[in-house]
Length: 505
Ligand SMILES: [Zn+2]
Figure (tube, rainbow, N blue to C red):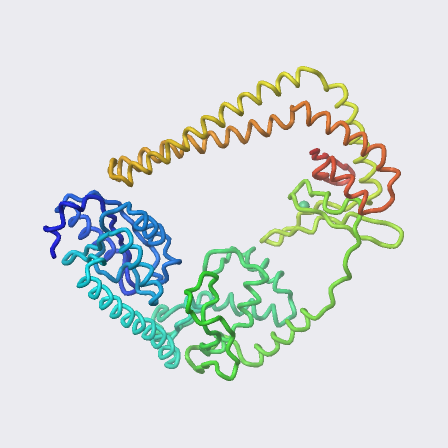
């Protein structure tokens, strides 16, 4: 059976494009051209499904999931693919799921040289046959990938991705280590500097700051942190070794259904190849660093902190971070701001006795309460009503525009628009939807601050707060009480001036 004899019943098709592991984006574009050409020659209206990932499991390919649902609903007369097995190379269950979707809805599969009707006995066998081979081929490919990695590692070849600082892959200036690592001499002195600092017992966080101050970034272009420094310091690659086979399976959350579970392989089974590349530290240095890190990590952490009435509420006016407390037997202090940026520069906001800060805060709250009573009038109520109407109006328009976007998408899928037209229209509606959403958000924000009901409620909460704050003695309860009216206290102390601003709810 050829396409010619079935052409009269085929009008709407989907083209499904997906690359196999061995192919690149160019191949993908080639396949796309072949399929578009096929559609044009046969006068098919078509919708493109371009799958970016190469996973074999259906559930990890969003486009095939969508396509199969639509095939089941009978949306298309046929699905065009470059080869039958592009739809799926998964296990028998998945092969079956694909087959059933096409059979149930009487949808054909078209390749450039054949048309498959899965409800036709002959083609059905053919489909199974092809499916069988696709499975065998897939098993071979994954096996070869695994083998490649293992064999490469056993020959001392680098197969672990981006090499760690200060190494580079294969060549640096006139140094060559085929499929292995060489030292970037410009980075070597920086690495040695980090190591020497660590050997002197300097904290990884401090080392990171020193390096950041010098304007030196990680290989990925980020600032250094205590984590990246520590990871680098304990890396055994720098001893000239390549270690592989540390883990097995896939730690990925959405792993293939029959993937091996993730586990860490015992050290005796690791593949360790020594003398693969130039070492940049000695075994003695490495051992010393491990000891130092172990000592630092085993310092006991201070006991759990007690809660204070203002816990979690005091924010630094200079950097926005939450300030913490120092609680002694007789007094409680707000500690100076702890925050240090990536360059090691301290925020510098000073500490204060919490009693003073709380007194200031309550005074501010009282003032706010007094002004609140004055400003409370009927004008607000009117303003709120107008605003409410405006929000409602905009929400209706938003619904209309959302519907319009759906219609545009539907029309494209039915082939009424070209891709170009569709993109233009889609963008227009999306823009206006975004615009409306942000307008509504802003209006609602303003509404909340003028709303008369909210105002009355807030008034009640303010009086309740002022009535009880001096009477309640339990810290946790006082903290809850503060949280009924404020989001935080923004605090600044420079020399002898203290500034606070209350962020009211
Ligand atoms: Zn600060």
